[in-house]
Amino acid sequence: MTLPLMPKATAVWLIEKTALTFTQIAEFCGMHPLEVQAIADGEVAQGIVGYDPVANGQLSPEEIRRCEADPALRLRLLPSTLPAPKRVRGARYTPVARRNDRPDGIAFLLRNYPQLTEAQIAKLMGTTKETIQKVRERTHWNSANIKPRDPVILGLCSQTDLNAMVAQANERLTREGQAVPTPPPPSDADEAA
Image (tube, rainbow, N blue to C red; front, side, top):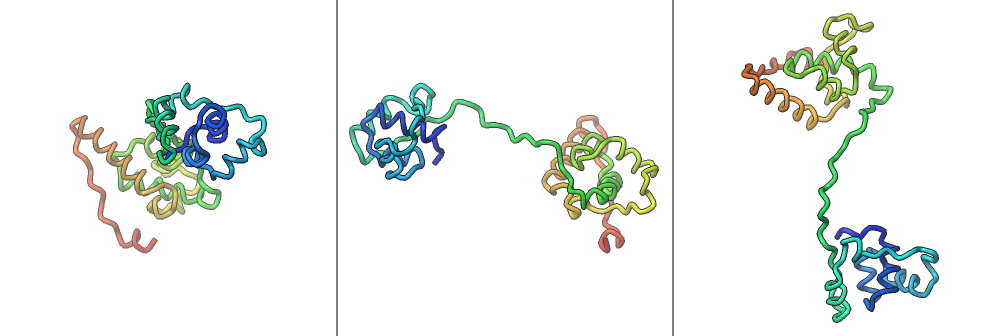
């Protein structure tokens, strides 16, 4: 069950303003009944200002009256009208030990997924377009040692993220009326790596 915002402050308000039992308040706020009793006795949560769940759209007055009438009933949180937050990713961090593997992963993506744009590869691998260009043109400082290796196996990106980027690139090519390239079959060198 989801808990109300600021559970202790909500418990303080419910203790002060309602005739609900300690068990009802404890179950609604995700606390133990003895903790709610300690709040009521003034032993815990001294100085916490009560948080009104009715004014903040978490409970309705009818719900409180319904539960005050029957101690066996439990309070139900009102459904939120706010949209669910989107999962926002921050900048991708690559551990120091794996940074030397990044050009290998870029080379793999360039060879096997030519439909990916530089921006997509940069986002997926956490690198810059300049680095991608250097790997593509073989002007990277370590180009003699770059071996195309799967970035998922190297731990540089997840298979889910890679599949999503490839699907997005394929949709773009389909919209533009271009043929979607198929990746080459794995060679013996890829399996040995």
